[in-house]
Length: 235
Image 1 (tube, rainbow, N blue to C red):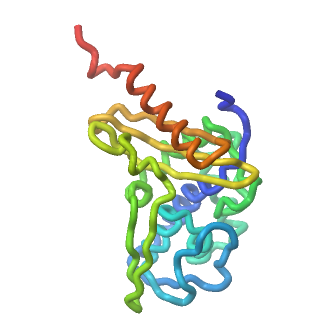
Image 2: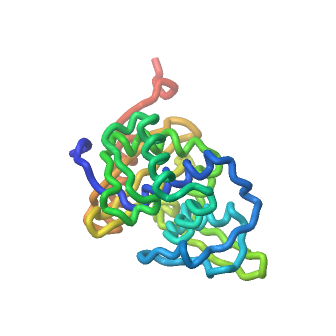
C-alpha cells in the first residue's frame, strides 16, 4: 500500500551509516570514547562521555539501542567529515538501486532523510548481509563493559525480537526501527522460516509504536500462511 510514497525514515538511516562506517574496515576491537562533539539531542544517550569502550560496542549502541550520540561518534571515528560521510551514504544508496532515497544526516534525526518502501527493501536486502550488522540487529539485549569496568545495558528498540516470529520455525534475520514526529513509526525486517523462505516486510508511517509492530507481524504471518515455496509443494 502506498509503496511509492516518499516518507522520512528516521533511525532506519542508521543501517546505512553503519554500512558506510564498516566499509572503511575499522578496527572493531580498538577503544574509543564518546566525546562532547558527538552528543545529539533526541532519544536516549546510553554511554558516558570520556569512558573508553570497544568500537564494536559503539556500533552496537547505535544499532541495538538506536543511540544517536553513538552513531555520531561512528562518523567521527571514520575520519571523514560529516558532509562527505553523508555523500558516501547517498553514493552507496544509489549503487543499491535506491533511486528515490536521500540522506542528509547520519543519525536519522533529520526529516529530510527520505525514502520509499521499495528502496528500503533494497537497503535491507543488501546491508543485512553484513555479518556485523546482522548480528547487532538481532540482539534483544547486550551489556557493554568499558575499560573502566562500567557496564552499560542496551535494550533493542525492536519488539518483534520477542515475538513468535522470532521463535522456531520462524527467525528474524535482521531489522531496524525508526521514528520521527514528522515520519511516524517505521520498521523494516527480514524474516525466515525453517532457515529459508525469506521475506522482507517494511512499514513506514505507522501512527503508533505498537501499530508498526502489529502491522509488520500481521503482514509476515499472512505471507507465510498464504504463499508456498517450491520446496513445500507436493505433487
